[in-house]
Image (cartoon, rainbow, N blue to C red; front, side, top):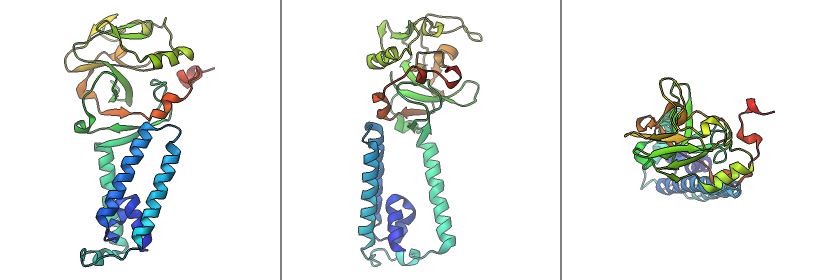
Length: 280
């Protein structure tokens, strides 16, 4: 079915060999993917409409280009691939899926958030785009959200970088100061306060480093070279971050996380800030 093949060629690379308009199909595919990612990162309530419009665009474009006869003079190999048979088709599909899997693990990946440590920036079960390849991440700055393995190797954590090498960090009443200046986003802190999700008396919100393992308590800490200080956005209860294991070496960061913007505009309730086992 050439029409179906062309449709696959637009929605994914599987059907590109079935149409002579390979470059056009590839350009439309890349454009659709780019628009999808930008919409996912930058839109909130309109995101569902954008998804639908992109899908309609792909289907209509596929129907149009499928109606155009293939130019075998420009692409004579298409005559060979027009009906590759189930064996070649399956092999090609496996190769394509393998490349996609490798790319997802190496370059970018969609991950699902578990837990409430990044409330209100990210919500439980929300999906976020993670850039894995160091060349694509950009510089790690204050405010960058990163993912890294747990110190015990059992899972991964997502936290926000609040201080860089050479910075002096201090936690007081749930607020962060870097080099003597407050650095928390006022909008995020106001939302936490309004929902009762900022516990000013919590020990973890008044110590930069807890007495864990061989480390001593500290109200103020200077980040060593080659490391960053990471914190959870949620200040309602204790979460494992640099207050527990100290500054995080840059070498342990496995990706930069780009959450969807839609969570920032959602209302926040008190119960959302606590893990399920602590809820009434």
